[in-house]
Image (tube, rainbow, N blue to C red; front, side):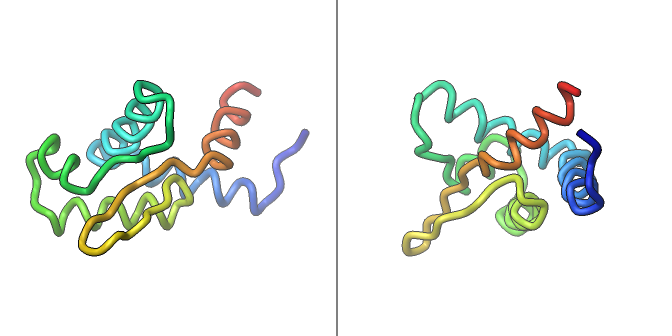
Amino acid sequence: MPSTTSQSERLARAFKALSNPNRLRIYQQIKQARVSEMTDSGCKLVDFINSLKVGAPTVSHHIKELVNAGLIRVEKEGKFVTCHLEEDMQWELRAFLDE
């Protein structure tokens, strides 16, 4: 099935976001947490700050880029931010790579 322009644009945004090593690590960490816990409990912003050893503003920027690319979604509960995979985009990436 040929790619549509909008699909190509979505994939290009996703790949551009994932081309940054820190954003790729964040995405992988969310994905691994989902697999290991067998639930979509997500990852907390503080988890990324601790694992990447970068400041909160930098992590927030990376999270924003992943959200804008449609790769993850965030849920805010008070001052806590939890990140979850966007399943549709994960399947779209998988389908593209499997073609």
